[in-house]
Length: 148
Image (cartoon, rainbow, N blue to C red):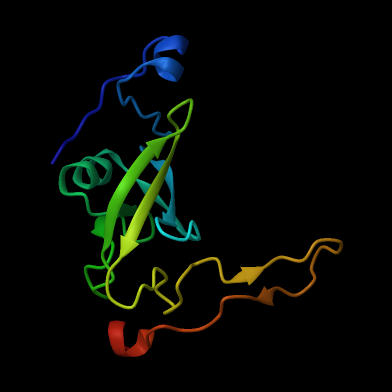
């Protein structure tokens, strides 16, 4: 399926207009940060191509483009932890998206079984210092959910 969005117009139209004209990168992708609508916690970051963005808009369920697999995927299609989009915003120059979602099932957004993909903190002050685990509780067993 080929999906196209209008090309960005003038600087003023891009920043002040009311048309969605996403600025996809050279690979046809735009970054999307995903947060929990209730808590504001950052859950994940992913990429969308035009097809994923259109599917998300049309269904109200988060879809993304997997760079490693080279294909569209609906978040939760395997795990059941589908993300219902409560609100989607675009930034000022339309090259980044923000999805505020409700996660079905256990509430885990990460394929590792955790609530968030951002479960490790990077200490400041010393490059190469070990990462620190935070919010590390697993809400599901990935081996049981995905196999292997």
